[in-house]
Length: 334
Ligand code: CP
Image 1 (cartoon, helix red, strand yellow):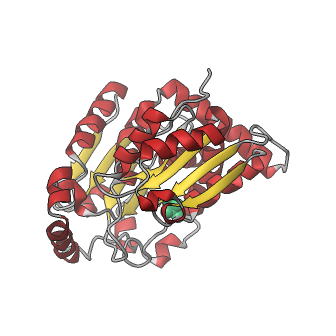
Image 2: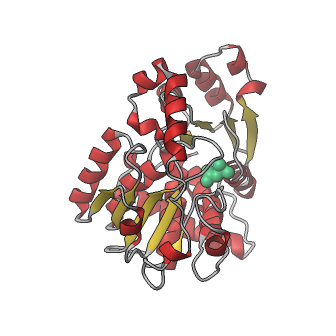
């Protein structure tokens, strides 16, 4: 299967057969990395990475990944580029695609990020990769699924996974991680429960598509406003904060940004009890595993006791898998 040149903007744009090729390559690359064997799939090739926001895992998995594949990644931020003087996505994409072999962008501004990436993709003849936007975080979705395959089964049909909103007071996190999981997990037969306070829904079009994906693959997807009920008998729990963006249409939000942010902040303060702690973990399956995209807001989203429990927490395996899955996508598309 030839995936060279294919954009990676959402896992939902890739067929299951294509994603299976990605996971197969991931396993090969992971083995070679641990055996310290060379695997120079991209000698002399250049990836341009543009970050509009901070990153630890994404930035370093991509940059280290490019080095290990024999190429080089430019670590760019919008303020270092003419983007800060108004150069548009289309022009940036055309120019960088003439100089290198791939462009990867993180832009999570609600109503703006995915649009920016789509504009780049329509003008670039080299693959555009989303390093997270306001709608999707496809690299995170791949690492999550790879971690589930390793800790449970390469065919996770019937596995009960709960993605739950959790309280955090750091910043309004994008919807992109739970939305990616909502679309991707059911395609692999996972029975998914998504829990959130009523003020923190996912975007309507994602909920509809996630239900369609579950129906097509014979899995189930449930939505609830009860965190305790969502934890009952779960094999995997993913407690994770996200902002209340999904309660607003994009235009409604962009036209009333300050008012929406103030309302989101008021709503957030009502739900400090949405935490993954020992009491809630005991509601889940006896061998439950904790996953989290990280960074975790410790003792708000999840207690230290659970996050640092090696019998429960697989968050660092999940973080490491960001490297191997990123290398797989880059080596197949660039
Ligand atoms: N999970 C994730 O995307 O981490 P970073 O924000 O550190 O890249």
